[in-house]
Image (cartoon, rainbow, N blue to C red; front, side, top):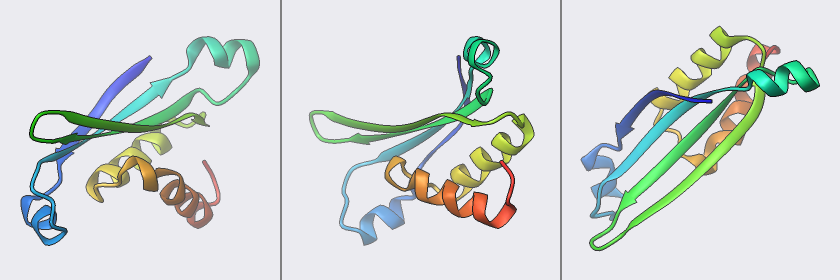
Length: 107
């Protein structure tokens, strides 16, 4: 089950500095893996990051999913909050989570 955690549009000024003329929305979801956790003893919580670029006549959507991240819901919420505050895109998600896990030692 995916639960919407939060979303944001990348700031217009940042897009203009990068030469991008269209809006980009980022959405962050918490994944709850209740069935898989019970069956396979895997992590109960994961995350999903979705980036939507609104082009003139189309939309380009990319996403990154980490289905089994942690059994600690509070930790996953903290990670999602960090991703949202820093406007992390799907392409950078795994690297950022890797850096977070190295600095906190526990997921």
